[in-house]
Structure formats: C-alpha cells, structure tokens
Amino acid sequence: MTWTRRHFLSATAAATATAGWRGVARAQAAKPITVAHSVSTFVYGQHLVAREKKFFEDEQVSMPGFIVPGGGARVVNAVTAGQAMFGLGDSNHPLKATEKGRDTVMLFATDTRCSYANVVVRKDLWDKGVKSVEALADGKLVGRKAVVAATAIGSGTYVYGVYVLRQSKGADGKPVNDAVEWVGGGASTTMLGGLKAGKFDAIMAVPEWQWAAEEEGFGKAIYDVQDEKAWNRVFGGPIPVTVGYALRETIEKSPDLVQAYVNAIYRAQQWIRRAKDEEIAELIHKPYMDTFSREVVLRSIRYYKTIFDWDFAIDEKDYDNGLKVFIPIAVEKPLPFAKAVDPSFLKKAQAKYKS
Image 1 (tube, rainbow, N blue to C red):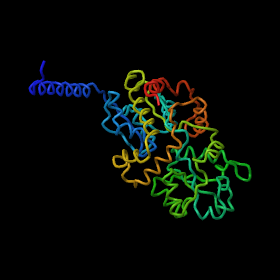
Image 2 (cartoon, rainbow, N blue to C red; image 1 turned 180 degrees about the vertical axis):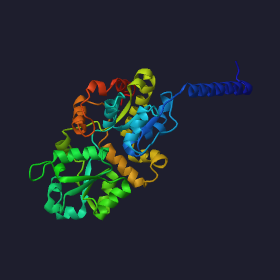
Image 3 (cartoon, helix red, strand yellow; image 1 turned 60 degrees about the vertical axis):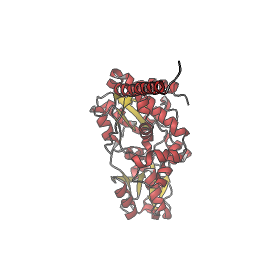
Image 4 (cartoon, rainbow, N blue to C red; image 1 turned 90 degrees about the horizontal axis):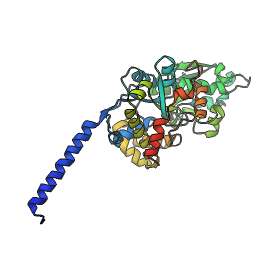
C-alpha cells in the first residue's frame, strides 16, 4: 500500500483519538484517595514529591490535594474519623488511636531519628556554663528551676523532650526531668520569642528553630539529634519516628488502594534519595514551602536526608526503642509489633521499585 498524505492524516487522527480515549479511560479508572499530614514541610517530603511527580496517578489513584490540619493529633483524628484514608505523622499517634479503640496500623517509616528532639538553651545560660542537658538541673547555673518549653504539653516535642531529660542525670544522680518545669510554648513566633526574651530557659526545637536561634545569637543547641553518638546514648538506636498509617478496616476493605499509596510514597523516597538537593527544592519550594527562602528549603532537604530511612522498613528492635519513649507519656501499655505494623505492602512496593 502506498502511503498518501490522506492515509497519513487518517492514521494519525485515529492514533490520536485512541490515545485520547486511553487517557480518559485511565482517568476514569483512577480511584480517589485522601491523604493527610500536619504541615507542608520537608519532614513530609515523600507526600509532596509523590504528588508533584504524579506517582499517585501512576498507581491508578487520584489525590487532588492534601488534608493539612496543622498538628499531628489532628491528622490521626482525620484518619480515625474517616476524613483521610492515610496519615503521615508521629508513630505514637497510631498507637494512641489503637489504644482508644480505633485499630490503626503502621505501614512504613520515613526516618530513623526525631527531628524535633533538639534542645536549645538561652545563649546567656550557655555562656554561664549550661552546655549540656545535664546542666539544666544545676539551679546555681540556671538561677532557678529551669523552664523548658515544648509546643504544647502532651505534644510530640513534649513526649521526646521528657524522654531526653529522663535519660539524662544531674549532678545528684537524679533525672534532669525532675528538676525542670515544662510549659507550652506554642508555634514558631512564641517559642523563639520566649527563648529570646528569657521567658524560657530552653526549648524543644525543630531544625529551623535551632538554626534561627543560633544564627540570631540568642540560643545554642545542647542536644542535637544529628549527633549520632548523642542520639544513641539516649535512645539506644534508630526509632521509626515518622510513619505512614491507616485504619485496619481500610487495609482489609481496600488493599489495592493501600498498595497504591505505599507504592507512590516509597517511590517518592527513592526519587529523593537519588535526586540532587537543588532538583528537589525546585520541585517543592513554590507549591508547598514558599513562606521559606530557597536557602532554608535547601538546608532542610540536606538535614532530613541525614535522618531519612531509605528502605522504609520498621524493624521490631527499632519499634521497641520507640515504645520506650512513648510509655507511659503517650500510651499506657505496649502494643505487640505484629498488631501495630503491617510490612506486607512495603515488601511489594520494594519488589516493584527496586532501587
């Protein structure tokens, strides 16, 4: 057959129509999922990357936008209330939900250390000799019972902060936590403002607060989770801090959607692992983190890359390390690993997207 211009145009039109029909069919076949995290910063970068790289669509699910309620407790509430199918947040939240009667399961972990377990002391106290967590218990150096601020009593910063201070001993051999007063410090402005004004002697700090306090000259870190020896001394090894989770009923009723979610997020983690820092910043800065400068976003990316868990697996030993932190501050009784964690979806994702 001789290809004339008419034949070529007819064939092209047919191919275009077929491709268009396939695209429509694919869109129609996509099932919706709802996904939540507390704030859109790089600690939840796997969610942000998965959406921007269209990894959800590749798994035949649609995810139009994130539920961002501004707090980890609100995220787990959204999951247990059925507003979100999947949550990404502190591993004590699914444990709490299960303890309260809403069986909630961890699917994977994105990191191995808690990025908000940093302790930052006032610079004037540092200059007087308060250069360690242990020194917070020294009333002569501090001048009073040390006032330590978490974002809120009972929050993640409080849970991890109390554990750090309980594992550290003052000169009298007693836990430092016995010698301090905990207060709620709120969000960025009030936490940093309180430290700067001398209202707080120390604060629990996310990396961005630690950087701000040190760069502006009113605070110094006395416990830094990036110091591996300091972390292991207190926590005994890695902890699955940030985890993806879902209700058990979601896992049982919609295993295909659970698999799609885990696939997309695992794939995002592998992309983050391989991508250049600048490439990641270009992808997520304007859509999600435009309240920060590009330099801060880049610094955040570099920071979290040092504590991210690239294989996503939750080991039983690491899970037990976490339980030591949570009981009895966050949860009353230990939950068996086999009930708290379902690794089956991650194993399938790892097999599909071998790095």
